Length: 107
Image (cartoon, rainbow, N blue to C red; front, side):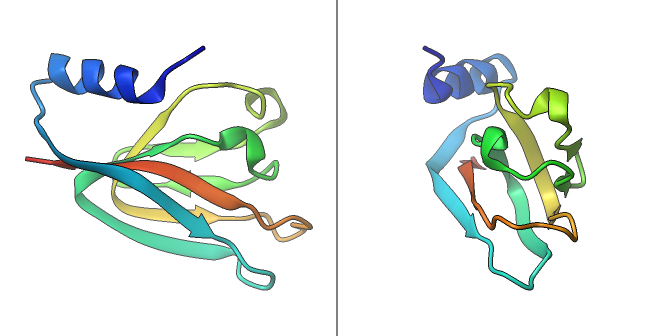
């Protein structure tokens, strides 16, 4: 099984980035709202549940962009975002998921 926290600590150690704080951060989506913004300056948000997002969801930040496509929907892994993070659900969304991140605040 893929252990997210071990992977994160290994990657940040290799990049010589110190971790001051780690915690989980959830974005609760609601009917009628299709765009969400999170300020993640001096920190990283690592998406842990891309499989739960509707096809066509876009997450765009200062450092990364991701669109959930059919082929990506089943991937297990982490996508890293930093800066201003914008989350856009598709207009035809029927399900409103909780979007789960591991938040890493760097030293």
